[in-house]
Length: 159
Image (cartoon, rainbow, N blue to C red; front, side):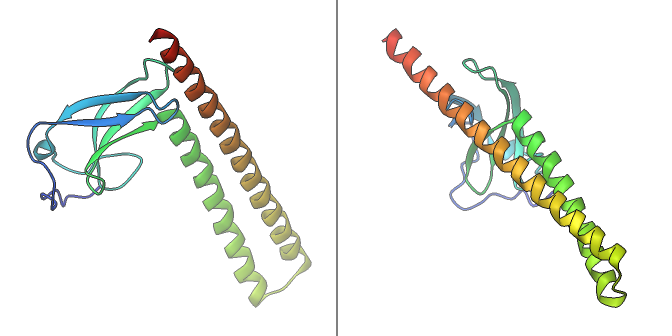
């Protein structure tokens, strides 16, 4: 991870209250953080982030990973399960693309029916994985929208 932890222009290096939202249901939160205490960029989902806290959203119970983003100069919360799922699919997709590139290079030098068949299989696997990822993202967006609506209704009833 990055070691360039110097103070950025406009950054507050003292205890400050930062606001962020649950990425799933958009419930607002705040947290106190002193950016000058960071030792390295150790965020697991984005570069130039520093881990601050893990916890559960009080409304939707999503597992949150909260980090300080130096570029944004604020807090960012991640839905850990969704981010880990995305990373897993991205790694699978990258592996397939890498295999496809190798097959295509071999095809350029030594064309054969076996390699053409392999290329066709890998392309269809890539398309299937893309479709699965898009479908899962759509389902996640719909889940988030329903949770936001449910939270807003619950909060409006309490008022």
